[in-house]
Image (cartoon, rainbow over all chains, first blue to last red; front, side):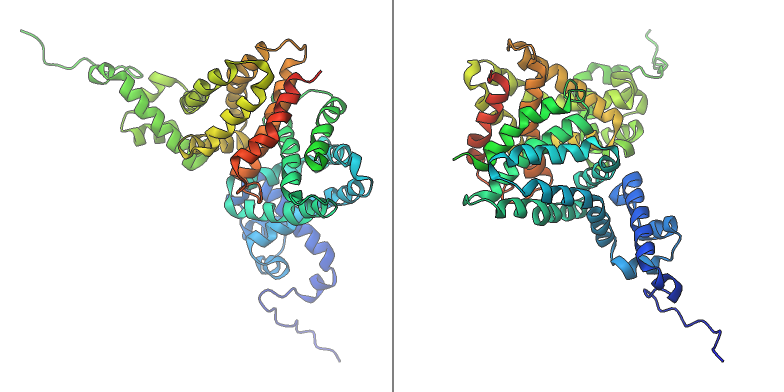
Length: 206
Length: 206
């Protein structure tokens, strides 16, 4: 005869039913986190608010992810996942036209409303909060910068990658965040044709 | 015999003593506004809070500037004043090296802590608030973009100016806001030497 008494819940440990469905629960928490960070900004978002939005106990959020900063990092990683796939495609090819592939990949993520919304939330948090900026900086450095730089031979590869990234970041800011014309309404192909040689030049010019 | 009864204060009208010292009072309000917007962000700043910080009545702030958005615009204009002087110097010279002069001027404002602080406050507000973004966009368009574009003959002059600005905006974001290395610590002269040809190219390449 089996006992019907539920096992005592330890703080930070998921109850059995939730543990069995852990990936779905994690996903639900991350979606709630992304929504909260994007609606309220980093400062005003709390682990408790995320837990409430996901319909779970705060302890479960702490159990899966840790601190608010770590939840943010996991939410950003999830939001950037399509970017990382696209990055691998962009990097997987000859270096002499990587500029166009990178420009097309990054601006493509911003053109797509599905990926634009979380990116915008990340940028807003990173601009306004030091902890969020640190997370963003760490991910961009480890996931994008170093991977591109690793393919290059120049001794100043990382600086080159950042100068190239700066051209694209500036386009993002003016076109998608500030929305200044004529750049906000310009044809995306025209923009890619103008910035691809700049990105390429920063990366590979002697 | 003259009456000693003070004239009744009309809402939005400064009392006589303050009116006599209007420029100093305006300046004090604008300094308080800049401080409030920069500390609290656009959303959390109120005309009442600005008035309190400046030691005046809210009605006086409304009298001089109007709505919160208009106070913000006036504060931004004041913060950008050194940039506008520098702009005139940068534009006052041959077009074939305007790229370096613009890069030097804009990055110079960010290198100087006195001008960097208000610029950072403006960027943070503009990234997070639509009304602030509109003010920022209007000022950048009327004060910088159109003036540079007016000196050029290309039919797509405004797009060119924005693509050039994008390179500099991206540097600002990575170096001063996100502070990602190696760009955050790179020698400013080295950065200017790398981006000046890009700015120039966007403006004048065929």
